[in-house]
Length: 267
Image 1 (cartoon, helix red, strand yellow):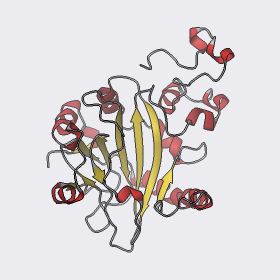
Image 2 (tube, one colour):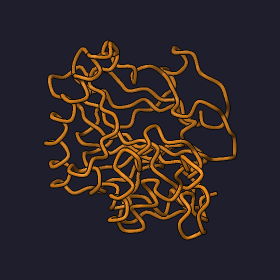
Image 3 (spheres, one colour):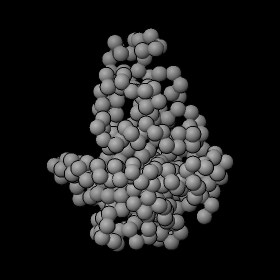
């Protein structure tokens, strides 16, 4: 296919052509082996914490291997976000500033049947040429047909039509990507995680980025604390969503421009 590129040689012409034709692309050699290993070493403890909450709330049956909201002050999440991978492409796609909508992960193991294996797209409403969200996958193990490489239905981002499962699996491409790669795809694209038939996990991070006025899946600034945000560099504050907050009372609302919670340039 014509949508696999080296991350360090990426350009917007290739991005536009691949997204127009396929709705997705692969950037190889994006993350170092050392960083991938650091992330993988952190996932098990992060999963155990989230798995316990899933079980306590009775929603664990179809969430096996899924981790949500991995942005915490003392884990790899900040280091990942701060690197601003594919910043140029996402600004180009969303036509300006953007924020993190969600950062999660999947540990795909043999015989698991999590909800991400259902055919789905990651934005509920079809907005056509108005692009509001873009997806990023960080590949933490080589994606193969045997271990559950994601199915992506190329071209399906262009119309508001959910394919039936038979048509989807007969026509979809597989994201056969190397460890350390990044996959970007239009959030309108229909896709599904594959089944893992091997005895080793197939791990990946899944991130969504949106226009700043789009509601985050978790209120990261409130979760992390407003005072904590004051310690962050401006680029990281922007992406985490500190410049697109919603006032909670009149005192927060009536502020001069430089102290407003929803800053200029957020759409």
